[in-house]
Image 1 (cartoon, rainbow, N blue to C red):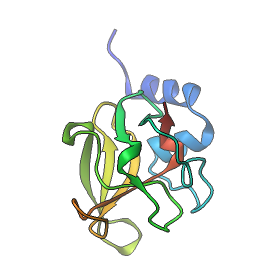
Image 2: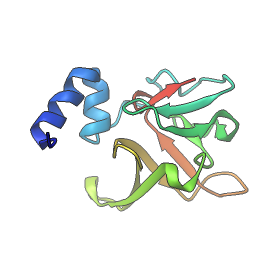
Image 3: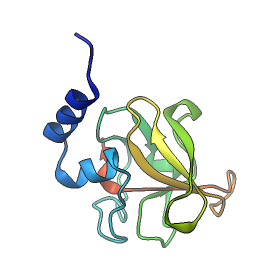
Length: 129
């Protein structure tokens, strides 16, 4: 049986919380300082909340002061995809899970060395293991 977009959407609605659905499937953003991982300091790996794809190592997480989990690099370049985002009157680079296309957040060129990048990610898009 071929997956229909409607059946796929229904599956996401059934498996994700309303907040996760809004963020991961509709590109919403959680309020700053509200997500469960913005101030999380455990050792492990942050996975996609939708498909469990490993995305970011805790060793790349840092306190950016933004109120969202921030990472200097993904686990691998193949873990995420980048997309031009022209919403809200600005130009940004959106990052999504490469496996299931879930919206994760955005990447900005103001991070720490060695990458100089800040992957600003919604907590609701992540699952920590």
